[in-house]
Structures are given as structure tokens and as C-alpha cells.
Length: 387
Image (spheres, rainbow, N blue to C red):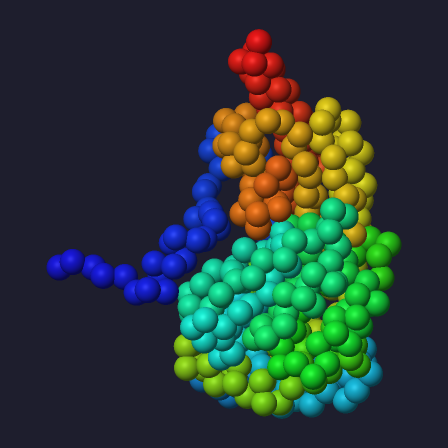
């Protein structure tokens, strides 16, 4: 039997630069993954076990546990300029599942979707899958939003997708830029999506959730997840907060794709969110320590330049050698360190590499030492060839 793929899959295969993933070999240092290296907080494990023992092993509400939706709405109200209702909350299978439901619900063939880049590569894959048109808008040289360019590109667009704090850039977008985007989109039908999965981890920069921006209130969808904040990537629990009509569309699409979200995980999520910062403050402090360590060591490598990360747990740096990002990445695999190619995240990511500091200080030090050695080899090889 001959397999014939869909047009959507063909589009992803032709355009996607997302890696399929690889298991590090030997003593390779893996600084490529956006995977927290902390264990699940004990309180989360206990809440999960209690939920299973209490019989949360059956289908639940297809739009998500009502108590969980209420808790998310309550917390959003506290940081917002307006009342957020449970009906505005959609629960899904991780932020990935929520984003997929959102794009499928709102984007059709030919619809334009503006994506400032470099940014998380899943967004463009989802848009390509449904036949939308990705409109790339480069960030400024300091990796902040180019608001005039975004507003120009967003005329007539169905969506504008922001990642804040940024993956891979570590940039945190200031409140005034979010307000300017909201003002600039007045009278349009463009929906603004703000993926805020890394909002718990910022370093001296003030983070403002898009849910609290009055100028965006009629059009914003905020996406969040347990994965990064609480080191619960395997629990696969995410949510969105949106205007009621959009929330209903996301929920309907989500339950059509995957049915009801995991009942026991949702009960654990209620306990997690109610304890909040108490469960991640130790991670926040450790990421901050690692960030300072990374800044110090990366700054010592010849030719490497970067903006100090303001949020998330990535350093996005220019490698400074005369080879493509993917060529450099592959060379560094042979040097014993795994990173991500900047070109995966958009055209202006070419020339950059992304390293995660969701790893121990020992692993980070070993990895950066191998980066330095590998880049020095590439410079030497290039010099030899050019002579």
C-alpha cells in the first residue's frame, strides 16, 4: 500500500526546521532542550496521587475541570485590569495542544499570521499545517519588538503571535510596547496571541502579562502551562485565557482533537496554582545563579556576542564564525555539546546558537568549554582554508 500524506503534512515537511530530537551519546553535554532539570515538586506528586486515589480516572468536563478554570480565572483577575470569567479559560494538553487548537479554530487557508522572529518554531509549523500564510517580522537588533514593522505587517492579518519572555531570545517585552500594539490594532480584527510559558523566570526585567493590557482586552489570547514554571513538562497541562467567543472556539476544537483533558492532572494543577511561587522560587533562584554563570563564561569566548537574557532559561548568542548556524551546531555535536541552531527560529536567527541553562553548573561549564574549543577549531579551519 502506498502512503499519501496530506497537503498540511507536506507543507510542514517542506518548511519546518524543528529537529526531531536526539539522545546525547557518550559524555555529550545536552544544552539543547527546553526541559527543566528539576524534579516535580513533592506537593505536586502528592496532589496527583491523591487525585488518582479519589477516583479521578474518568472523563471530565470537555472544556476542563470547572474548579481549575475558576482558579485560573481568579488569578488572572488579580493581575488584570478587568474581571476574567471561567468561561474565558480553555484547558488543553499542554501549551502545545492549546496553541494547536487555537490555530485550527481561527486560521484558515490563506489567512495571514504575523510572527516576530527569532521565535519558537512551533508557531509557524501550526500555521503551515492549516494552510495559513506566515508573515515573518524581524525583531530589532536588541531582540525587542519592532512595533512599527509589526503594526504594518498586521494590517488584515488574522493573528499576531508573541512569545514573552522569548524563546529563544530571552527577551522580555515592555508594557509600553504591548500597549502600543493594542492601540495600533484598534478597529482591526487581528487577534493577538501571547505565549507566556516562561513568565515565572525573569531577571531584573519587569514582566507584564498581556491579559493586564487594557488596549488588548478585546483581542488577546494568553497561553500558559505548568510545564516550565513547575518543571512538569510530562504532565501535559496548558490553558488559554481569551474573550468568551474565542475561548468557546478553542475549547470546541480542543475537545474535537483530543477529548477531555487528563482529570487527575487537572486536580493536581489546582493545588499547584494555589501554592504558586512557593513551589518554584527555588528554581527561580537557581536559574538566576546559572544565568550569571553563563553570562560570565560566554563573555570570555572570542567572537561570541549576545544580549543578556532577561527571562526564560536560554542564552541566544552570535557564534562569530564564517559558517552557517547549522554547520556550527553539527560541528559542536562532534565536540561533545548539543545546542540548537538559531536558524531554526527564523531567518534572522542565522548566525546565532541557542543554549539552555536548565542544567547543572558543572554541565554548563563543561558545555561552554567545549563550545569555546569547537568555535576555535572552526576559526582555525577557516583561516587555514582561506590562506
